[in-house]
Structures are given as structure tokens and as C-alpha cells.
Length: 419
Image (cartoon, rainbow, N blue to C red; front, side, top):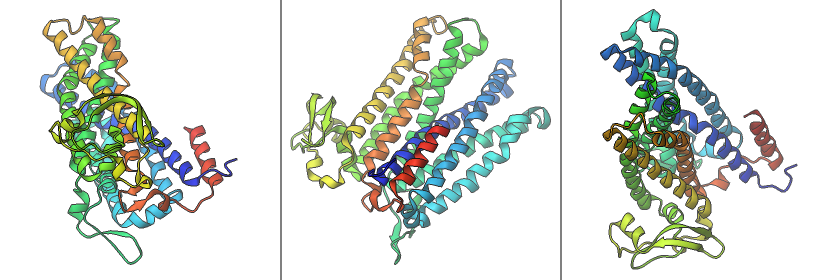
């Protein structure tokens, strides 16, 4: 069936499909675990019944999301051994220990306290139960720490050496773990998880408020979610800007693809808002652009020169159209989320927070926006790193297993059917 197909392309498609399915669950469970900890803390402090009712409401949803994240995450490890054996062999001495640390420090912590969190309130008492909830929330953040550290090392490798067998080995574990892009990516992803959760919680609260403005639980949900969107969305945009500057320093070709800069600009580069990147002609067709604004954003000077993809060998170009559009979807949704937060702040100031049906409908429509933005961000990050798995050091074509296309294609179809 897949005779004549490229096995590497099929393996990449399989990883992209399973990764896209998986990432939405950790993004949701990281934020939801922290939200549950806050709800339980507020219940312990205030004794208001509404907080424990909301805790029990979202706890069931968290259990499903957490379970789906675990199951779909196992599939990712499976593919390292089947489709990406060369990558696993070459990077195993670096990536392997970090994955093990994630299991030992995060997964065991979460698994150890999850049962108490789910079923133990009446058995261990409120205070010990809150400790269990807090441990699960901390565990999700530790998990994000190790996973993002490993992925960031692939983006900006540091602290390693290459042994006689061509394997990457750690020469300095601190430099491996705290590689140049890791702090920026960790902050950006954790904030994205919190915003994703706040949008879901806000959409559920708004859905109920559209039917009854006086529901106490819906009011609390909606108010807390909108505070998160109001306060965190601007911080996320600032964090994304800092992450972009870091990427420009360490992965310039990725930024060139994100910005659609095929040509270098010696006296200020335009910000291309929209257009169609054409790799064959090396230009963005039908471009709508703002003169010199890209240089102002990236270099903080209108006339600062910016290099383009014409300075990069074509075989090292990322897939520009995918990276270009995924980046715009992520940024556009980020500004929409900030707009929702500011609109809710205006309605709160006017005393119309729970009466404004326009605000509630806007919040319901924005419910999935966090998931879409997370997916778009990951697509930007991963396609922008191509054609490398370890940026600048290990090419994707040299990372794949020596499998025939039909073998990879059949497992891809099996995943699609099962999922």
C-alpha cells in the first residue's frame, strides 16, 4: 500500500499525529492540577461549600485527562524504539537519563498521591488530602521540567561530548539540563498550560451563566478563570517575546521561517502579517507587511539588519509554510486570549461580569483556543527545528530506523484507527 513512499516522512507523520493527540492532555492536567490545589486551599481557608463542590466537579475531569496523558505518552516512548532507533542510540546517554528522572521524580510522586487525591478525602481528612493534591500538582510541574529540558536540549544542545561510537554523552549535566533555551521554554509552556485550563474552566462557567446568572459555582469558576486570562495572557506574550529573542540567537533559521524572511534586510526588516510563503521562488506572495517592524521587535531598532534564509543552505531550511502559519495562529490566539481578559476586566469594573451575555459567548467560543495555541506552538517549535532532530548536529534522515515504508505506514494507520 505504501510502496514508493518515504519511510522517514511516514515516521514523522506518525510522531506528529500521536504527539498532537498527547500534548493536549498534559497541557490541561498541569493547569487543572494547580487549579484543584487552589480550590481546595480556598475551601480549607474559607470553609465555603462552593469551593469543595467545584473541586469535586473538576476532579473527575482531571482523572480522565491525567489517565489519557499517561496512556498516550507511553506511545511516544514506543516510537523511539521502533521508528527512531538511530536517534535513540545516538542521544540515549543524554535523553535517556532525563526521561528516567522524570519517571522517578514526577510520575512516582503523582502516582503515589493520585489515589489519595481521588478517593481519600473522607479517609485521610482534609489537611492530609490537601497535601496529596499539592503533591500531584507539584508532580505535574516537575514532569514538565524534565520533558521540556530534554526537548530543549534537542533544540539548543549544550554540555555534551561525542564518544567514539558517535553517541552524545553528558560532559556537564547542569549545562545539559539548563541548556540555553530551557528557561524560556519552561516558562512559556507552563503559562500556556495555565491559560489553556483557564479558558476551559471559563468556557464551562460561561456556559452555565448563559442559562442561569445566579449559579454560585459558575460565578466562582468564571471569575477565577477570567482573572487568570487577564493577568497571565500579557505575561505570556512578554515571555513569548523573550523566547523569540532567545530563538533568534540560537536557532536563527527557525525565526527566519517564522517571519517569512527569505531575503536578508540590511536596513530594517518588515513584519509580514499575512501572505503565502513560496519556497521554490523564495518569496512570500501576496504579503501584507508593516515596514521595519520585525527589526524593531527582534532587534529593538527600526534600521537593524536581519539575515534571511538566503544566508542558510537550502538543505537546512525548515518547512517555511507550516512554521510561518503555525506561528501566526499561536500569536493571533494569544492576542485574542488577552482581549478576552481585558473585556472581562471591563465588565467586572462595570459590575456586568455575570450579566454580559456577549462576554459569556466570547468565553465559550474561546474554550478550545488554548489547546489550538499549544498545538500551533509545538508545531512551530518542532517544524522550525527541521531538518534536524538535534539542532545543527543530527539530521532527521539520520535519526530514523532502517524500516520499509509499508511497515511504518501500517502502524500509522493502526494508530489512527485506534485513536
